[in-house]
Length: 366
Picture (cartoon, rainbow, N blue to C red):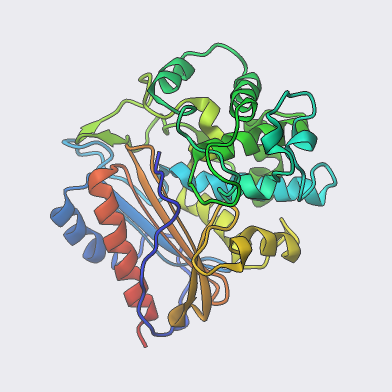
């Protein structure tokens, strides 16, 4: 899974013209995507320019499996990796609005029956979701745990609770307030959601996020069936193979897959000040950089200072399980979001960045 907090891209100035709504692949898709595939060698690449009520651009190119002939489509599903974190944070915000959770809740309130080290006293849920709590993946999400967790027979909430007990049973690895991007923070947030909702994280996010947004095709782990496969070292990885994704216990930190159409439904929450899902105050909490610092991580999102083309700040994140790549960039004030995805990490990282910059250049040109 990608350990970088966000994509810190320096984007040029310009403005975005009015755009037409698009529900099918744009006629320019091959023109934009084919050269990037040829240059990077990525098996497939897809992307979208999302507006408040539709698409300005939608395209896909390449094959579902390297060496094969089965081409990807704009309806295919893509593993979002760490871009799941923004969904977990939004789910917690939804529970806050319902009175089932609270901003500012400390570890004692989040996990009242767990024995925790006193040093965690006063550390809040926001600090964990902003990667400022002092928690680190070191000693928690290591090779031994990753292997053991793949075959752990316990229910996922039990696995996550045991993970949190180990994490909070020891002293923080870093001083409180220090930034360190850690998947462990969001495993903990998922466990807090499970206690607050009474549901496993997977059921909670379906009930409180996916269903209200009309997202019906989302799932967890590598997409299976007639879908693209992720690639490791250039080789397609069977989604049914053990280890095709990170352990399911890491779900809240990054195992969601969905189509671009469904991902657009989530991104529009941040283009419409919460839409029908969240109150504007909740969106502000989720998207305000920690301590008001420019270019700092917020809750599930990285932030970039004002960009002229965006008419304001930009939200951004990248995600990968080392077999897939996803990048999202959201300009709330402009009402536009850019998404690029690939079914390969190493080659896909270059491909997604190249397409992202092309789309921004095309739609930001005066």
